[in-house]
Length: 185
Image (cartoon, rainbow, N blue to C red; front, side, top):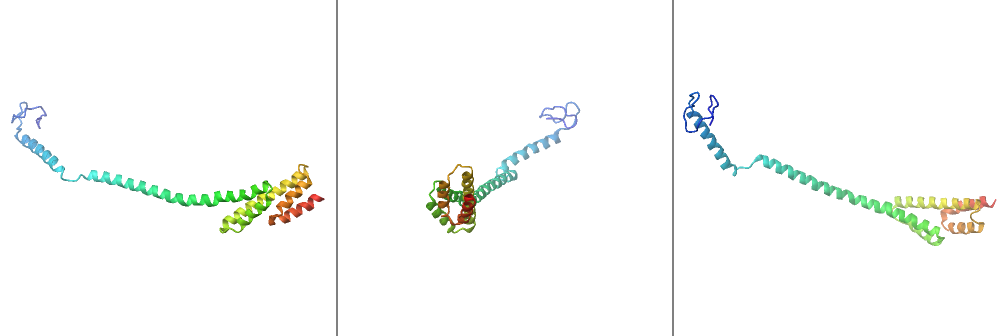
């Protein structure tokens, strides 16, 4: 033990300090009570809840709840996105290509059937967008054919066959008749 007066090391059995003569009996009692208090504290600590542990556990559980809610929200957001991508991107491209590919292989009757099927479909917004894209692509095709005829890459008979097939798609009739009139001059 240490002397409270001079801080020198003193044997625990002595009641007075060898160096300064200070009475050590009061410090011995204090020291014993300290040891007994810590013993009692450790004995009873297993019966009481540590508030620091509770705070740590509650933080961990809050983080876990936040993680679970985040994952659920992610999947809830992914469902409408998947629906949108499928209906408005995939089906849109599929419908546009169904008409234009049939025109490219000169299967005009099948192209007309595909075009009419799109025209009679239910969702108006998608139908309008698909039809405008198909019409733009086919009008561009008429322009390319006309330019090819002017550049002598396509004969008039070949051009006439293309125009006859494309005129089955009703919306192209005015454009084709105008191109025929211009090209015949």
